[in-house]
Length: 199
Image 1 (cartoon, rainbow, N blue to C red):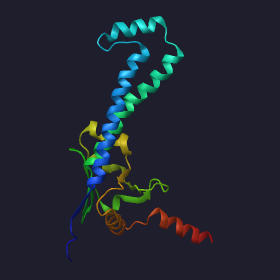
Image 2 (image 1 turned 45 degrees about the vertical axis):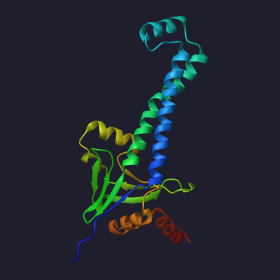
Image 3 (image 1 turned 45 degrees about the horizontal axis):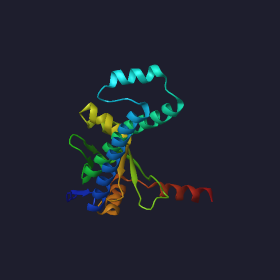
Image 4 (image 1 turned 90 degrees about the vertical axis):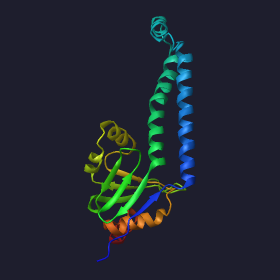
């Protein structure tokens, strides 16, 4: 029996440009939020303990607290979004005889045997550019040795999902390979079969 060819699929140049612009935009929002938070609370980062204590002692008004909370959410969320985009920018998928390798930033390379791939679904059926995700066995994430990288990856995608981005070179071929080799039926096929049974 002939060996199956190994093939790697990566993000297109356009996809990388979009990811880079999203990362830069997120960093700008993060910087703006940090700058604006000091204005809203009336504090100085260079003299943070003293100015923060003074602001609290004077009493914070609702017009300060509400924007401050929103800005804090942005300050926490923006770096996580940047991480998500960096993972997307670095992603490649390698179809091998023994499974699918999801490889992204240094330290995150996971082999999902074909039997560990449980489903394939479109994330947003209404979107112009389709993004799919694989539903996989949750033990795969344990292949990421670094606890920090494992936590960051889990925050971005969860334990049981692998994104298949819209801007992957020969994306349809990749999806067809995954479906064929793992013996999956797509969610659309499952729904069609269910509707036929109901009819």
